[in-house]
Length: 298
Image 1 (cartoon, rainbow, N blue to C red):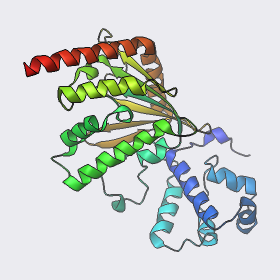
Image 2 (image 1 turned 135 degrees about the horizontal axis):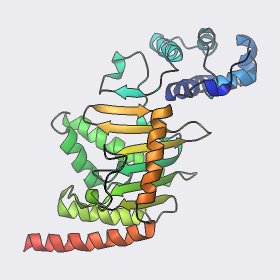
Image 3 (image 1 turned 60 degrees about the horizontal axis):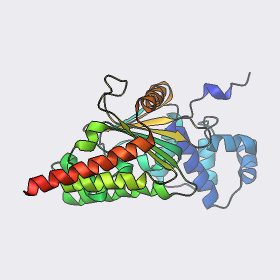
């Protein structure tokens, strides 16, 4: 009896593996129809492996590695180990050295590039995709400045700014941000840094693919009080995943755990003020920051 497709988890690891194998195939200019007879599979089945519709059989992996001329020992071991554990969901990365693990540490930028919609919730500060350079730099230095050497801090700032390229991607990626009102009053980078950030939020929210809403301070308890998170609604009907960050590292949540965050985000949307009211509120905050800056100088 053939197992049903829904019995298999289209995990981030299985998606990463399929994409990596496809890249090796295309590097050699091979079509699915060219490879399928060699590994004694239907070309549609091989395509399903690459799309993570079906799990990559361990018996097939060495054949593909040989066909694609993958002789680098580290690459072969990485792909074989990933196939062996591709069913694993919910990845925790505790700032380990990627060279010390046999499984790929899924990079956030890779996952973000596969999303068609990005939902951001900023509990304590403006989400990274909507930050100005000075605001982002102030946050990174506050969090990592005493831990990382200067060159790594600078690289981290560049990498995070590069994530914002998704805002102008083609085809457009829909970005929705919910930001706690209290986060909009935190003077990250000083009062001038906050003012620039508020103005940037107003400007970026005018883009057709970006929606910004404020969660008013009058809202009491809700499901997301534990902190900020990002929901990546993936392309091609892959299930959504959730990304979290904190001082201990980073985490991807999938399947049922991700579903809880998706439901929480939808509830937060109902509690937030409209995008139009948010724009007006941001303008009021800009004016308030001007008065505060003037008073500070005086």
